[in-house]
Length: 90
Image (cartoon, rainbow, N blue to C red):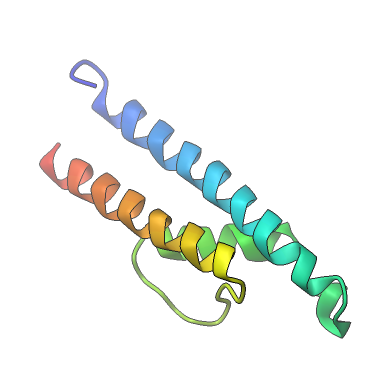
């Protein structure tokens, strides 16, 4: 991290997007299978929620409904805050 901090932070950001986006997809996809909005739901929504959560913006247009999804996004908030604090300390 000392030699190439920018690449390290972008790697951490990308890893967080993939990890939490996929966990959001797993948590929320089963709930959407029985509803009419299943056709409108895609991986893009999961990645969007993850991006907004990591960036600590929180628009509220999409949000997790299941307890597992909420728990995943709560951990994602801590990931985003620590990633942002590393970025500003850099």
